Structures are given as C-alpha cells and as structure tokens.
Amino acid sequence: MTMMMMMMMMMRPLHTSRLPSSPYLPFCHNHSPPTSLLAPKPPFLILVPPPKQYPSLLNSYPNQKNRHRQQRPIITAPMASSTPSSTTGEAEAEAETKPFSVLFVCLGNICRSPAAEGVFTDLVKKKGLDFKFKIDSAGTINYHEIKMGPDFKFKIVSDELHFRYHEGNEADPRMRAAAKRRGIQITSMSRPIQPADFRDFDLILAMDKQNKDDILGALERWSFRETLPADTYKKVHLMCSYCKKHDETEVPDPYYGGPQGFEKVLDLLEDACESLLGSILAENNLILDS
Image 1 (cartoon, one colour):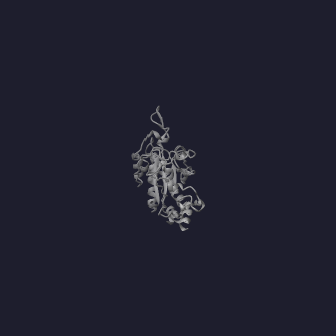
Image 2 (spheres, one colour):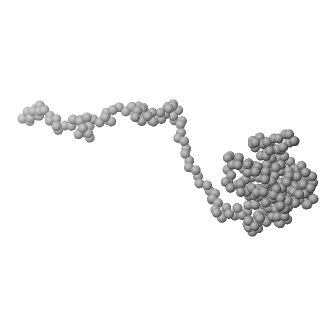
Image 3 (cartoon, one colour):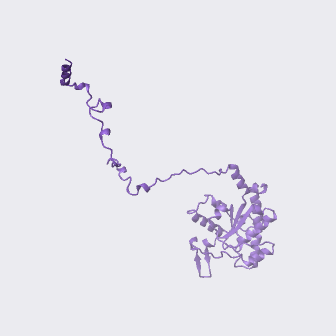
C-alpha cells in the first residue's frame, strides 16, 4: 500500500498556485523579473544626447575632444578695503592745513602776472605767512588774438595747436630790474593757463578785462571735457578790484612802453596785493588760527 500511495502521488499533478511563477522570490508579486537585474551592464558609459526641447543643452560641449580642458571661470567677490574711510573730522583737518592758493594771470606771463606773483610772495613772507599760501602765475597767450607787426595777425583758435609763445621763458628783464629795485625777486618761468588751474587754485586774478574774458572762455571750452565745479567762474576776478589807493580798473601792459610803465605796474600791484591779503585773511580765519 505504501508503494501504491507513492506511485499515486508521483502521478498527481502539481498545484501551480503553490509555486512561485518566477525564480526571483523577492519579486513574487511581479511575474516578470526586473529589467535592472536581467539587462546586461555595458562595459562603457553611454552618453544620451539632450532632448531637442532644450536647445541650450545641445551645444554645451562644442568641442568634445578638448572639453575636459575647459575650466569654469573663477568668480571672486571684491574684497573690502582694509583702509578705513576718512571721517568728517579728518576731511576738515585736511582742509584746514591746505594752503590758500592764488593764481595771477596776464597775457604772456612775462610782465604783469609774474610781477604780481613776486609782489604777493614778498608780502606774505614779510607777514610770516608764506607757508600758508600757494602762489603762481600763468598766461592766456594760447587763447587770445596775438598781433605780430602792423599787418600780421595770428589767432589761436584751439589749445590743440600747442602754440606756446613765451612758455619756459623768464620774466621780462625790465620787469625783473624794476622789481629788484624795490627788493622784490621775480623768479617764475612763463607757462600757459591749464585746466588743472581751475581745480587747484582758490582765486584766479586777471590783470585786465581781456585776460578775464580769455580765462572764462578757456573755462567754457574745457568744461566740456574736464570735470570742473559748476561755480568755478566765481574764482576769477580783476586784480585792480582790490586797489584802494588807485582808481584804475586794469593793470596796463608795459611791454611796449618805457621804464615808467613798469613802475606804474608795480605801484598798482603793491596796492592791490596789500588789500588782497587783508581780504583773504578776513574771509579765511583758519589761515591765521592754524
């Protein structure tokens, strides 16, 4: 009987519901084996091109051969300055120690303006204030109509012509001799007025009205290409506006005259410079207090 039962069991069909349909027991609820386990692993990396709906990615590597050499640019943020910014007190202290600057201007910078520079320099030295002033002189020769002879006229229309009539020359020897007799030394060298003068000087004094017009004309032209304060024109004044003992409104050019012309110029300049210094000291108390 035992033998018969064994034979019957061998002939009985197996119930398939009791056996898993797949040899992969962990995935018995999925009758198909997972693709990740069945798919062969490629021996190399397959690059899948980006989809066409993202055109910006299509040209990410225009040169595949050398793309490994391309490096991302290094972006650095600006570092904060280790130097602290100037405080208001420091700015005021700097303004207090800055010397008061005066520029005297005539046509050629060989007679009147160097004489004014010499007279004013001598005056402030006698007052013991020379270290509190910056004094210089210049000429408008580049921006004025120059007459050379009775029938020849040359007009400077632009400073780009680089025409320097007296630049680098000493003052007229007649002017230097007349000043020396009064104990005044004139040592300046002729130079033309330049854009920086309108920034560097606190006061610009013209010897006559034509000089003043030329200065303001140069300022107007330069203002289109230079950064100059809007109120720079307020620095420009006539020299004789400071005279107290004389009624002249202009310092005459002695170049074509005799010795008395140079003496007259010095008389006017000494009168104007005395009043000029008093006016500067009255309006700038820091010069005396510092």
